[in-house]
Amino acid sequence: MKFFADTADVEAIAELAELGLLDGVTTNPSLIMKSGRDILEVTKEICGIVSGPVSAETVALDAEGMIAEGRKLAEIAENIAIKVPLTWDGLKACKALSGEGHMVNVTLCFSANQALLAAKAGATFVSPFIGRLDDINLDGTDLIADIRQIYDNYDFSTQILAASIRSVNHVAEVARIGADVMTAPPEVIRKLALHPLTDKGLDAFLKDWAKTGQKIL
Image 1 (cartoon, helix red, strand yellow):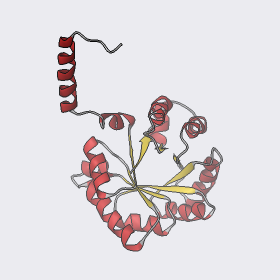
Image 2: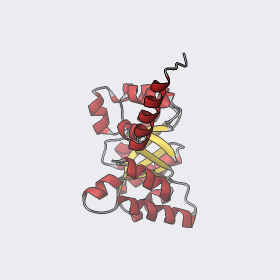
Image 3: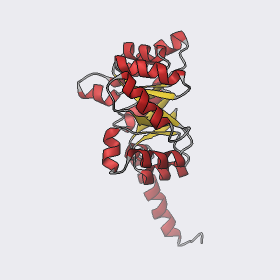
Image 4: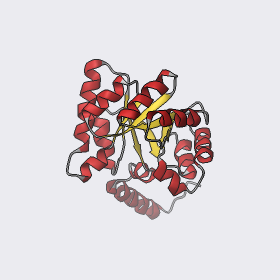
């Protein structure tokens, strides 16, 4: 499973990329606002840090506006994935932009039927928001499983990009189900390395080592 960072924080992106943990980045208007930077400037910098897809989101509500904004965003770098919402106009924009050879990430997916439409419209990625489904007492990982089965049934090439990841358990679950990609905040990715038994074992090793009175350097 590919790892994308869901952030516009260039320092966090650079750290994860240096470790070889990053296959791409997703951004959205809220993350751009949080960064406090110009969308074109910060997106260009991110595209220079990672070689994989960098999702940049349109904000128009009509297909014509999305297409125009998408073309503008695609000029930033070759690895831009244009992000459009899973609305009827978003699907129109997806079809047009993917037909021009651009990567398209269809976002805000909350049903298997929506994901089916995105694949039919030529989406490179579809982004089901599992955390937001959990928020309304639905199991977001069930949606990932449904989409996986449907896409496998018909050999769709659209990649399932599990989004709205809130916990390390989400990461393990979507990996088990077979999501192609997961995107999560950098702090969630860092937490994947944590386990209390690792800390406990390391503490015991260091205490025993101190008793030997030895040094390696």
